[in-house]
Image 1 (cartoon, rainbow, N blue to C red):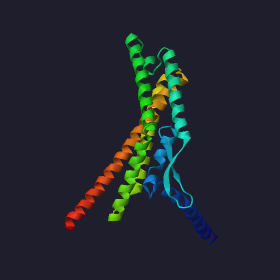
Image 2: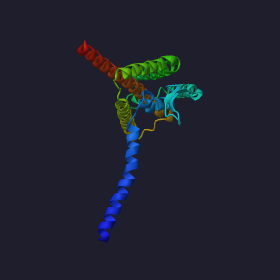
Image 3: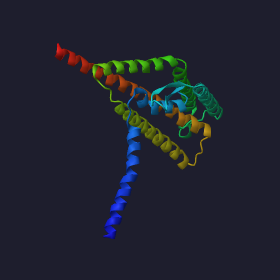
Image 4: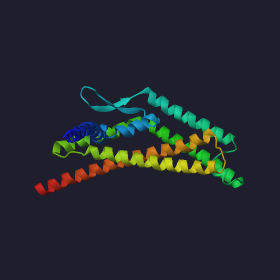
Length: 243
């Protein structure tokens, strides 16, 4: 009898411990607002200096909204400065690149030089287009919000939890691919007893990370547009059936 009581007590304790974990997981994977569904994505872009704002939460009402910060502008400028310093160091180090450790000739030297220049231009353009036309992204989010309010007035609700889970899935998959590619590349170099400089590590890894974040943002916004088109199509079908 005592053993049965102990087992029942253990089961009750395990269920009590699992409930808070399930609640937290559901809280992380559920969203009721547009800004709440995009909050993880914009936190990542804010930390990497790609956006000058982040999604804040009001502790009293629980409402999510865009909040600008000078740290976002400073963070973007610092990232561009770090890229410039690292690219200059790789050029001064005989145009150091990953490919240069495998093949070295006049043709590959010119190719490495063009790769470094094009990489710096590409990353700089991504940062400048994300920082300078700041109002375009905010206006796009506001248009999505007003469209959702109009659809809600007709009786159609947007599944924001799907957007949140989709953003998680795309971010995690892109980060795994980026990490696997970077780890495999440098593992081959270190296995050949080659020690790349820290500047090459920074330019190679963070450059691919920025591109992965840009692809993730594009994928999430296209998914948002797709969902709105589907909802508008449902509204038009309902109107056709009514009339």
